Length: 457
Image (cartoon, rainbow, N blue to C red; front, side, top):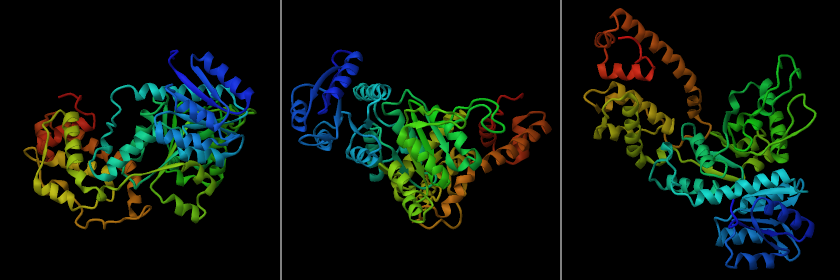
């Protein structure tokens, strides 16, 4: 940090201002102080270029939210953090919904304060660096919904507020979460994704919070939990709706207190994480059904991002198809395949219950089956009856959640069949392809995909 870095403190308590000023000066940050909303706005309207603003929410002449709102309107790239009374989460959430970067509870803990300051100042450094576009392939698209989503990602990346990502299976929720992480102030920290539905219920507390050696049968050593693993970075809870109610209570407390207690430990451990969560289900409906706690929903849904399903942005199918086909050809070191006009028409008429993930799988299969580098409608092998448009969240697209396990099983079978064909032809690849009744191109691609291309000839 250089002496050019400047922060504004707005608080009516002299002791708090002094503590904050000393901390910032030791970090190489110049400081201006104000005791009221009026004085704070006067500083913000001056010629001084601030990189950080810290404000109390309760001020003698008004509400600190006025400061947050002014900054959002006139200096939207300036990170502003708020101080709130301990345990007053409703106020903190309101501030973050308004646009606050983060919050700290009073009395202020210096370690948390320093971490917040470092994260906020990194945002300014990254904002001034070139190349802030979002390159994630699944976020490609010119449809209005995707343009809006990318704009929202760029905006929420500058905050520490919890984000709830809503979208059907296969729309790319984890890629949106990764984009938020890697374009924010925590990009150098860890990104820890976890599928909440894949953790056995009896192991959940240990997985999330860790445990001490000997705390239960089988605990042969200390174990770090997911919260600790994500310290300094981002914890992404995918399929958060699958958490049982008793675990939701413990999760809520960890989020609110910014601390966890491993099983068998006497002391809590402070953690500094940004929380992102997602599910393909309608979480508000789960709250109504009392399957999900309303207080936890309120806590994780400070900002909501909705990913449009592929059937609502069919103008992007051609762009995504070209991207995936180029990707397949590069990975397999094969010529790029061309999507014929009739094939593109077939894709455009299909409703894609599995969304972008299903499009990728369909094209990968077609890439291996096509002849003369041209993909025709028959190569796509689309279902005869297309899934009706307007699948509700939590509808029949649920079946796609377990596709990864099936793919692994089928890959093992495919590998065994290919190896048997190679052995029977003394590793003559051309003969093995003929024996299997597939083109040499398709055979070569499958060898590459199954990591068999390094076997003996």
